[in-house]
Amino acid sequence: MRSALALLALVAACGPRDTGGGPGADTLHAQARATRTDEVTAGRRTAIVTAARRVGPSVVSITVTSRQQVQVASPFDFFFMPQTREQLVQGSGTGFVLRGDGTVLTNQHVVNGAEKIVVTLPDGTDAPAELLGEDAVTDIAVIRVQAKGLQPAPIGRSTDLAIGEWVMALGNPYAYVLGNTEPSVTVGVISALNRNILPSRDQPGLYLDMLQTDAAINPGNSGGPLANADGEVIGVNSSILSNTGQSVGLGFAIPIERAVRVAEEIIRQGTVRRAWTGLDVEGPEGMGNWKTQGGVKVTAVAPGGPAARAGLSRGDVLVRAGGRRLRNYLDWEAVKLDLHVGDAVEVTSRGALGEATRRLVTGDLPSVAAEKVTVLRNLQLITVTPQVRQERGVQSDGGALIYRLPEETAGATGLRAGDVIVAVDNIRVRSAEEVGRTLEGMPRRRPFRLYFERQGQILFADLTF
Image 1 (spheres, rainbow, N blue to C red):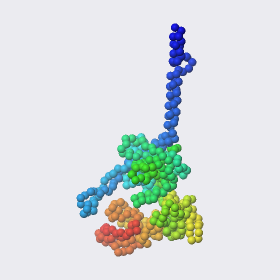
Image 2: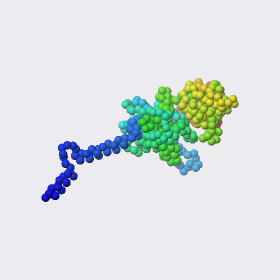
Image 3: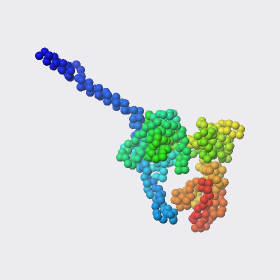
Image 4: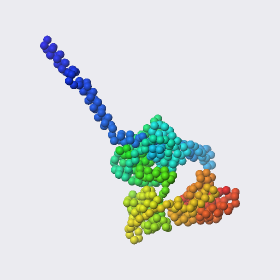
C-alpha cells in the first residue's frame, strides 16, 4: 500500500501542477515558442526587406501604345518591293515617382514613339499620362499623371557606391501577364562602376559611366529604380547584355545624378540643353585596343569655339578631363555628357610643346544658337557654318541644315531633321537664305530636284509645291 502511494506521489510530481506561485509548464512552453517566433520574424526583417518597403510604394507600371511599320508577307515579294502597313503595338516598362504631383521618371526607350501612355499607380489605379519630354542621348524621359499624394522615391547617391555592396532592382517585368501591380524585387550586388558600353548601330543612347549589377533586370524592368540597402534610388535600370534577351547577370543602370539632372532640365524647359566643347576626337575606327589606349586624339577644332579659345589644336591628345583619365573616346563622351552649358572643365593634353592643362568653358550648340529661317511655311533651316559643320559632322562646306520639320512634311518628302540641303536643281545653295530665295522664285506646280547630304552621302528627292 505504501509503495502504491509512493508511485502516485511520483506521478503527481512529474505532471503539471498549479502551485499558485507562478506560470505552469504550458505557459512557459508558449512563451518560449513566441520568443522563437519573434526571433525568426526579426531575422527575416533584413535590410533588403526594409529597403524594399521604403522604395516600393514609389514604383509604377507603364503601358505604352505605339504605331509600328510591319512588312506584309506576299507571294509576289520576289518580284515587287514588300508591302508595309501600320499596326498598333503595346509595350510595358517601369517608372518611379520623382515628385508628389504625379511626375514620373523612366527610360526614353520605354515611351519612344508612344501615342498613348497609361500609368498603373501603386494602388492599382490606371491613369493616362502625358510626355513632358525625352532625351534619347541619356535614355531618360519624364511623364506626368494627374494624381495627388503620390510618394516620391528616396533619392540617394551613386558616387560613393562600393563594388560588392547589396542593391536591388525594382520593376514590373512581364506586367501584362501578371495580375497585380506590386513591383517585383531582385537582389544582387554592384558588380562594377563607370562601365562604358560600346555603341551599336541601333543604339541611339550613350550608355556611359553605367552601374553594373547582377540583380536580374528583365523585359519590363526598364525605367525602374536600382536601390541601395538603405532604400535609396541610386540608378535607373536601363539595359542588359544578353544573347537570349533575358537576364544573365549583366545589368546596367544610369547613375541617379545624371538621370535627375536630365529630368529637371526636361521639367523646366521641355528639352535638354547640350554643352558644346567645339572639338571632335578620334572615334572607334582609330582606337586600336580600346581597353589600353591612353588618351584621345583631337581630329577637328571649330574656329572660335570653346576648344579653340582654350588653346587646343588639331592633333593634340587629351589625357585628362574633369579630373578623370581618358583612355579612349568613350571616356571623353562621358565627361561631355554631364557638362552643362557654361561649365568650365580642366583639360590636360599632349601637344607639340609638351603637356599642358587648360580651362575649357563650354557653350551652346551652334545649331541651337543659330538664326532660324523658315521656308515653305514649315521647314526650319539654319546656315551651315564651320561651327555647325564641326557640331554635326557635316562634310559639305556650305548649305542649309534642316533644323526642324513637321512629321507630315517628313513623311511626304522623305527629308529628315539633320539633312543638309546643298542644291536645288542645278543651283548650288550655301545658306538658309539662299534656299528660301531659290524656292520662292520657282514656278508653282513645277517638279524640282532637291540635293541634300545625309550621313556623309549626297542624296536627292524629287518634289513639287
